Length: 203
Image (cartoon, rainbow, N blue to C red):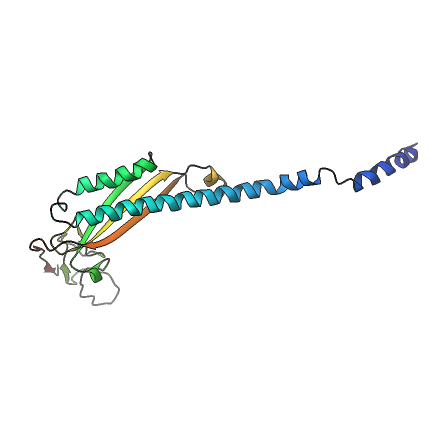
């Protein structure tokens, strides 16, 4: 009886094996998740690129204004302008600012001058250094916090944190929040005298 049943099922199994109906649906079911993830990833990347351009444009405009006489003292107003431009496109974003002033372009990001006796690249007790930013301690970045004085070079940086609009971060194991930075370096107008001073500290 079992043999008869198998003989009856065998022709149906052969015809089922030759039937290609529904193959496209199965193939789509296999490739759709990967394609969708790729599509979402591209969109998320482009959205971040757009956010970077918005932030950089706002920072550059504010930095140009801050170098003019009369604007250097009103830093909060310039920061508010940058934040307003960003929030107009990304309402839930958080924007923070920092300014570091230097005497010349080649000093940007450079450490304070140091008598590095052992050559380890950092200050040890008893080694003399020139305190350019007035903090009383050796700094790996000699920049002075603030907008500086006349003819100073200013590094103006804004940090923007915002929520990703697509859930692709869950699939890729990323953080829910994206953080972007934009910076620009400009020189203040020579509208007055520069009162920067420094001292050598060996203690």
